[in-house]
Image (cartoon, rainbow, N blue to C red; front, side):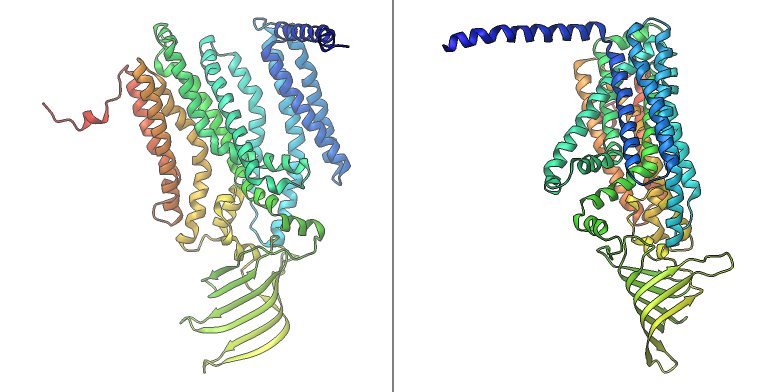
Amino acid sequence: MSLSSITDSLQQPVKKVRQLTKKLAEMVLRRGDRGGLGLQILSGAVFLGLLILAIRSGAEDGLQVSRLWLVLSVAVAALGFGASFLLRKFTRRTPQRPRLVVGILWCLSIAGLIAWLPSSVVEAQQAAESFRASGQPPTTGSYIVQRILVTALLLSVPLVSIIYFRLSLMDRYVIHSFLSPFAFCLGSLISIFIVWDLTDNGSHFADKPVSLVVEFYLVQMPSLIMFIMPIVVLLASLSAVSRLSKFNELISMIGAGRSVLRILMPLFGMGLYFSFICLVLKFEWAPNSEGYKEALLSDSTAAARADNKNADVWAEQSWMHVNPSAKRSWFVANIPFDLSRDMAKVTIWEVTDDHQPKILWKAERARWKPAETPGDEPLWILDDVRIYEWKADRIPRIRQQDQIVMQGWDETPWKVLSSAQNPKYLGMSGLSAFLRANANQDASLRAPFSTHWWYLFANPASCFIMVLVAAPLGIVYSRKGAMSGVTGAIIIFALMYLLDGTLLSMGQINAVPPFFAAWGTNIIIGIIGVVLLWYRSQNRNVKSWRSWFAKAP
């Protein structure tokens, strides 16, 4: 058989495949509504994710109550997923369609809440036991606030959809102009980060299962979203308003009787909503994700914890703690990852009122035993101790003991080692616990933690500040103005990051008050945005910098 005959015989099947593919594509484009298809994908992803969690929880040891809640959440998500296929029966103009969309979103939100809240309560109870074993002050308020925020975020999705369907057509058009570039920028930056990070950390995943790689990047999502969200909101707002100006749609809206401020109101609402989302992420998840990322990358530590849970796994750094009220200082050579475990190579010394040596303990091991009943006192147990005691003649008396039990010391493992933590990686509970436990300490010791406490609220607010800046810069009246708006946005964004890093560094060394170190950038950039918005609302161009220094005629 010749080559030409073989080619001719293959053309007919290939032609049929092309025709079938074309018909399927036309069917999807004709019958499949894009908005409905997106909601079907979203509901299907939620249903599949909850189903995987339910299956995994059934294969692992856990509470039967949590499994029952997961099964219930899967059932509710399945209801929403099934209802999403009914969207093709209603066009965008039918009044039943918004109600169906809102109902589907309610199912997805309630399913997520049912799956998350019971496990979150169990997690809080386990954390409370761990805090008690290490002497960390309870942070009940922070845990309650976090759960309120997450619950509000889950329930806000259908509530926001209700508000959206009640908006006017013009407001919805402005929101659509914002969401399209927002989704594109967010997806592009996340994809670029994952590709870049894989090239950097690919060697760590050579012999690891795919599930660990997926977990590694899912853990980083909160911190990554917090990092890129301001620039994404800035670009999306600038693109949306520039598009409205480019096609004279902004002028048409103004001609319809709306002011510039009223036209931009949907964008300000989106900025507030994304600031709220970032606040939920920044409260606990985003700071902790960086530390968990390092733990996953630490092969030796992870292997040691997996192979032998009773093995001693030490942190790499030593730490010193000074208790000025008791005139007692601590030096811990080997810090455990779990603060409820023993510390090793511990040196403790006390001094007199005139700062002369009084007594010194060098212990191979030191462990803290919390009070079991309200009337008991917590104990410090020192093993294999060498004691140096100075009398009036300033000559040390040395003795050795196998074990010493100390009462009346107000230090706990968490209090001794908490100042060794990086405040950048602590959420609201960790920062609040440190500030409460060290309320009487020097301001320079508290400054980094106080600064980052305020920064937990200031950083999410930068999303709204970016909208406040980008919206007036996107309003252009000529081709020259379009380029100047983009240039101004880049300059302001660079200024924001410069001020942010500078003020945070100054706040951590107690050079400026913690509140201003955290909020100073938002205040300065916000004032610039308000000035720009005032000029644009008055239909005036912002004066160039040369005009401010020009000589008077």
